[in-house]
Length: 193
Image (cartoon, rainbow, N blue to C red; front, side, top):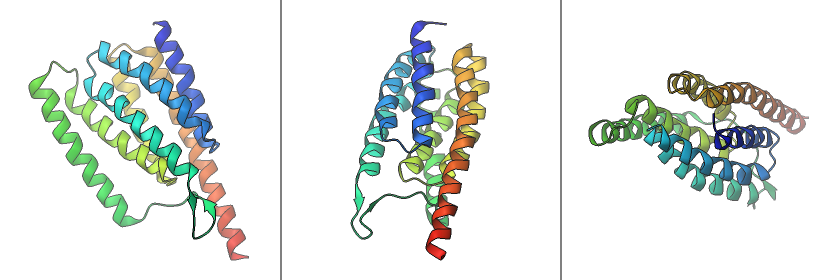
């Protein structure tokens, strides 16, 4: 275990906790954590996850922008809500296609470790990040599923602290899911009254 993995661990826990609290600082904390994991994943030949971390920088910037802009129709910031069925189907289709393409590239043209699994996890992590930036409650459910699989993959790669981190992510995602759902229900009750 290296100091870089310890720092990434701490920053990631803080970033997810801030996200669940809807604190915009989460995006900045996550950017720093992402850069650290680019280095870590590259070192263990998880190229799709290293590449994913690079894309996460852009997703973090998008999330920060999206959480900062006002909905001019309602004069408020973006609110927590549910994903509609059409966007769900598009997101899953895009995740599968992108994961398959990325997996093919890494499997046939690199010495990547676990190229198919790594690529599918990376692809659906982008989907989950997009959903979080849009404040879709389902983002937390998807993170729970992905993080559970990541725990196994990182244990296999002997990244034990990172596996623990992703287990903690599951707990934080469950809490974020609960918090966002309760916020949505409270808002719905207020609007209904």
